[in-house]
Image (cartoon, rainbow, N blue to C red; front, side, top):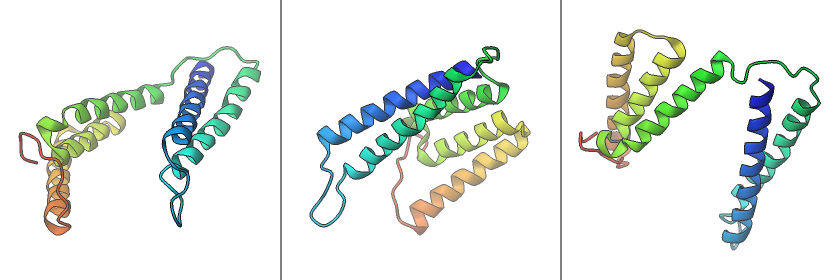
Length: 149
């Protein structure tokens, strides 16, 4: 786990630095009477940078050099992340409601080992609820795919 923490610390440090630079150069920090569009990204970048440093220092000081790179829980999380990326790439086909339902059911299956039946019910209920909640009740148009959901 030591190497995974060091890698994560470096990645978040670099992400924080990039966020600070992009927010500082491209977005105004203030607006007329309120914070501007660069306010939140700048402070998020500062937070990412600051809070990644103790993770790296702690792991570099750790004398125990053994340990596996990823724990089984980390592998599960990576699988769910891959599922999310795949579904978001396929949103033009599925549409937002069906895509979010697939992410929910896929996460259930990968993380909790739920049965296929409960995952199928979750897909249907989630897609219908999102579609009617946002599309009908709140009148917020969601991206529709080829399926129309």
